[in-house]
Amino acid sequence: MARILNSQEDMTGRLADEIVARAAREPRFLAAIAGPPASGKSTLAERLAAELIARGESAAIVPMDGFHYDDVVLRARGLSHRKGAPETFDFRGLRVLLQRLRAREPEIAIPLFDRSMEVSRAAAAIIDRDVRFVLVEGNYLLLDEDPWNGLQDMFDLSIYLDLGRQELEKRLLERWRYHGRDEKAAREWIDTNDLPNAERVASCRRNADIIL
Image (cartoon, rainbow, N blue to C red; front, side, top):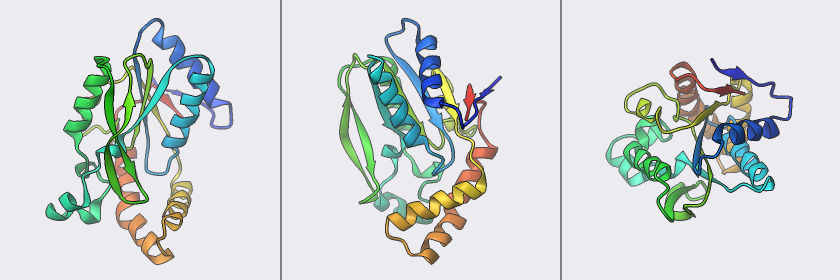
């Protein structure tokens, strides 16, 4: 049964305690941080990685967004209007990467999504074999749909960020304003794409070990 932590408490320290305790003496521990778009996954991953490193541990972040299909592929498939939906990601590529991470292969290159250019940069970071904690963050890591439910054996711990619709809308508007969309364009994209994706994440997900 999932444990629910109070968002007003010092979650980062408590999560670090939980992760270190669960890892015991394991040389590699993979944690999934899932939730709707703009729910704070990247921020939590960054804070948690920093906390683990401050404790003398090694940690790295793997964003699922690095597996976005390029806009050229989306246009060819008629999916440009759905960018960010589950079907617009390279699921198999992500799963292979997770398998390599679990196997602790040396010097694993990972792709990173550059939102300023709306493209994924291949081999943009390296995760060495001696990195103990790998924090994987993304919208659909707990999605209970084929083929995404094939990730359920990939993680040692799963965390889900549960944020209300009103706060999500506020954050999404701030995000798209920051990236240069005017109010009308931002609102249209949120209503037709971001919020449907958020509802899909919330309504069709596997149980998480921890809910924030």
